[in-house]
Length: 186
Ligand SMILES: CC(C)(COP(=O)(O)OP(=O)(O)OC[C@H]1O[C@@H](n2cnc3c(N)ncnc32)[C@H](O)[C@@H]1OP(=O)(O)O)[C@@H](O)C(=O)NCCC(=O)NCCS
Image (tube, rainbow, N blue to C red):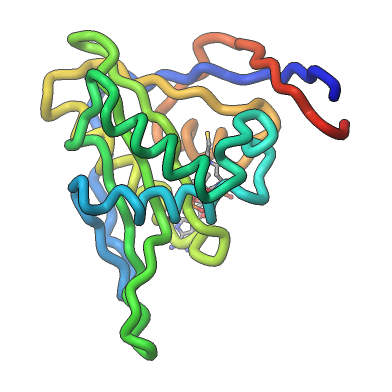
């Protein structure tokens, strides 16, 4: 077992500077507001989004279905959990008629005017369609609804795709932090 340190950026969005218009979701996708009935669907989307990503080394719970369900239950019971900033995306397959959860984001109110995004994830086969941007915009609007002015998140410095998305949305890097993780192999 080796202890590895991951460099992570803390990024911040200033809601006082406004929020870009929400773009429409592609055909056959729908945005679902938070409900406790959706906890398993959020967990499934989280697991399928993160299982092959570096973040599942940084946060091992993201690499297992059980871990994601436990994490999702823990987030939704946390003080400050913000339903208005927590959204799910479903893909409604027009051929099979089966609905599949393919995107998740969760929000927490940390202080009166500060919120944080927990995990945003889009399942690989549904990426680069604008779903991540839609989830972020909807979540930021949910933070704004309750009077929050600043929204923060943390991202691993190697996660260049996610950083590009956050910067394009208007997030700025405010500091660098290091997160230790026990790795079986390095
Ligand atoms: C980061 C993540 C959420 C982005 O989700 P996404 O749905 O692919 O995001 P978007 O589609 O909005 O944007 C991604 C790219 O698609 C492009 N795009 C957006 N809409 C598009 C469209 N309609 N057609 C084609 N491309 C499009 C964007 O320009 C962007 O391009 P870029 O990466 O070159 O800048 C996703 O990659 C993910 O889940 N990663 C693994 C989990 C993770 O790391 N989460 C972040 C933890 S901090």
